[in-house]
Image (cartoon, rainbow, N blue to C red; front, side, top):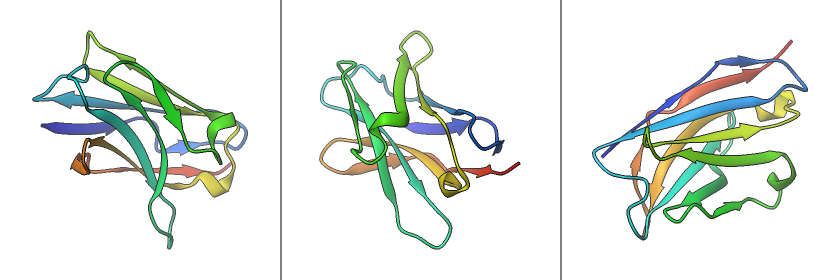
Length: 116
C-alpha cells in the first residue's frame, strides 16, 4: 500500500487548506480501515486531525472539528482534507495514513505553510 499527499505548499491566512491523499495498492473502501490525516507543526509532536472510515463516516479532532472536513473519491481511490480559516499556527507537515490496529502505512508528508 502506498499513500501520497498532494496540494499547495503555501496558503494565505483565512483561506482554506486543501490536500488530497492518493492511495494505491489497496482500496479505501476495504472493511475495517480508517484513512487519516495527521500533522506535525514545527518543533512539536504529531497531532491527529481526523479520519474517514471505510464506510464513509468521518471523525474529527474536537479541537479542529469546526474547521475540518474530510471527504473521499472512491472512483479515484483518494481522500481529501479541507481545513478552513487557516492561521500561521496551522503551518505543519501534513501526513495521510492508514489506521487499523495502528498506523501501518504513511505518506511521505507534505509541508504546508500559512503565510501572507
